[in-house]
Image 1: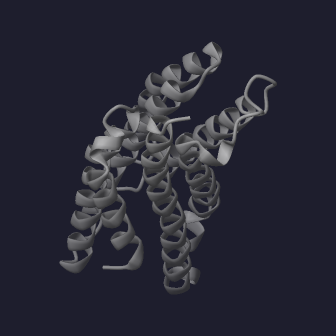
Image 2: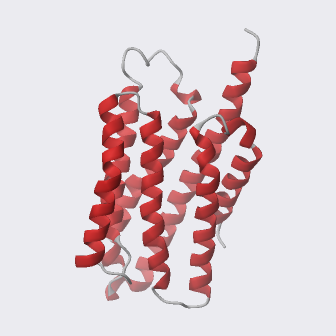
Length: 220
């Protein structure tokens, strides 16, 4: 187990501990999502430990699909502009169709679906930029963005998926015979670093939910 996995567990535990503060928001759905994430990562660890080959790719391909759908749902609930809400919802069937085409005609069942991951990552970066754009509009710019819990979710997602686009675009090259050993090390190091950023941002977001709730209950 590595530090990024422990941060995933810590993020899950924080969300469970702060359940009372999250339950009135859509952030509460992070609890089952993070539980699924930790489970998938643990299964992935076991598959590597017991040398099960590429079978863990199947699990990660399904999980990545569910992950993008979950984030699209969050963006839908946090966007204020209607056209952006519609885009977030429209992304879900588009992603499923793209994933199915990739599975049937391109990367198959026992290959890591980098095309789907790149496709979803592009939209995650786009949605993050749209969220930040909403907050520079005249009716929003006076508010403190740093105190918004979903802002930190977006920061984590933006950095994670920008990095993900780069390393997964180079996935095949890093797995080539010339780069096999060093490629694995580079891919693993970057991926773990991105996970650390992502789950740290999630934890900050959960804590802000609690702080914001306390502030709203405080006498003015």
